[in-house]
Image 1 (tube, rainbow, N blue to C red):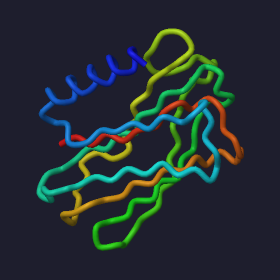
Image 2: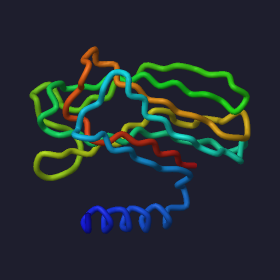
Image 3: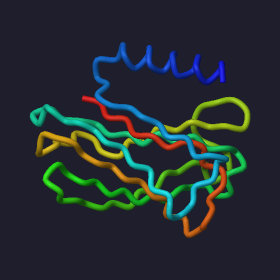
Length: 151
């Protein structure tokens, strides 16, 4: 518990010093298991529609993850209620089976660019809803998923 508090404090400090940072939130998957019916939702308030943004997907996986990639469904709901859907592939290991990302030991962290130079067309709250799309009811090895938005 003490380690988690220290890590959260450090992350808060680092994020608060970054002028590009608009939003970042990570969600922990209990037991490192992501069920097919479990949706991970992030709410982001956008006030500046004239700025171009970059959107990242943060992933922490264990080296016990049984695949080299992760497919995700992303549903984005706009402030006016309209929505769009995307399918995203995140490559977690190379062709030789070596894990990508940073981290020592059995946990790896990756940050994937999802959108570059994105223009949010409306002011208000956007909802980003992630689902795992690996056709496995209980996907083991994904520990955290997150969303980061920068100017």
